[in-house]
Image (cartoon, rainbow, N blue to C red; front, side):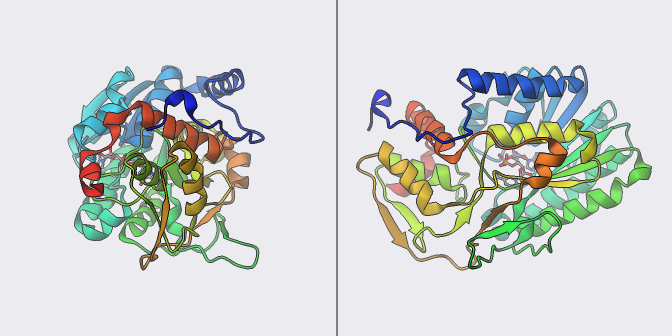
Amino acid sequence: MPELSNLPTVPNVPNVTNVTNGAGTVAEETILSRLAKLRDAVVVVTGGGGLVGSRLVALLHRAGAHVTALDRMDAYPEAAHELFGVAKTGARLVVGDIRDRAVVGGLLKDADYVVHAAAYADVAACTRHPDIAFRANVEGTQVVLEQAAASRVRRLVLVSSASVYGDGVPDAEGPQRFLEDQSLFPLSVYANSKLWAEHQTRLMLAASSGTEYAVVRYFSVYGDPQIPKPGSHSWMVPWLAIHARLGKPMHLNGGGVQVRDLVHVDDVAEATALALIEEQMAERTVNVGTGVPTSVREVAELIAPYFPESRCVTTPRPEGDPLGGYACVERARELLRWQARISVPEGVDRYVRWLLATPHAVPRWLAEAAA
Ligand SMILES: NC(=O)c1ccc[n+]([C@@H]2O[C@H](COP(=O)([O-])OP(=O)(O)OC[C@H]3O[C@@H](n4cnc5c(N)ncnc54)[C@H](O)[C@@H]3O)[C@@H](O)[C@H]2O)c1
């Protein structure tokens, strides 16, 4: 196991700011000053106990909002929810289900803003259990939208996914760049449920409802303390890094040529918070990505130097594994006045250092499966 002090240095990438250095602190302060509009506002974040939700809750709390996270808190083993740390943010945590009208209505009646991030958020699990996906992502979303429309909520931000674009079709110029207004081809139960939620949000929160909406389409979110869910193969940064840490080969399906737009969870939290307040975002949909494609192989190559014994093994590409693509980020720059600040080399470096410093984060099921 490498010593933390002997780890490689992050390649020097232009335009990278690190939240632990001076430039990063300034950038965070800039975001917080823009979020000053949320001071004393009442904000409800559904799914606020999850990976993105907990980061968002912490940011909104730092911005001076009165934040309530509503979450079932059963998407991960208990220890993972502790790693995410929503209970330590100082925000209120309500353990409950978004399908519970009384709970959702009770929270939304006093809310100024809502971020609807709760979802059965695992593509493969949604395929295996479409009934659970339907209950959480469709029925649950319907309850949140009904209660938002019936309340005095000023704006609801719906968290959607780049999966609504479907498989990326590379051309001679490289991987596909996804534009917000292009045709959408959801190819999984999960993607279909997210697209349904987008349409239903638009239909239920029309101008007449008095509640504005905005839609954010996340690309591939990563960053500590992300760990795979039991039985999931999604989330390539943790998946590859944990295998390398366990001394197991990093499997590259189909040689690892598939690309993803890897966007750090801190950047995602900032974009989502800005979607609550940027006036131009009303009734608009934006991609939340970096605008840079990264292949699975490139991620493995970034992880490998931290684990000198690690090796990559090429395995067959599973049927349905999307070739992927990356975000067109122009609209996010224009409407959110935001762009991702954390490069993939820097984000992977942070992740691996966190993983090495937090050995208990490796889920038992994954250690046992790898053994
Ligand atoms: N992680 C990604 O790469 C990614 C990419 C695109 C979109 N998204 C979307 O971002 C949002 C957050 O995803 P995440 O990665 O943080 O996943 P996550 O699983 O960590 O968070 C989702 C949270 O929703 C909660 N939840 C699920 N069903 C619920 C219900 N019925 N009632 C109350 N709470 C419920 C879960 O307990 C979990 O804590 C989701 O809407 C997801 O679809 C994520």
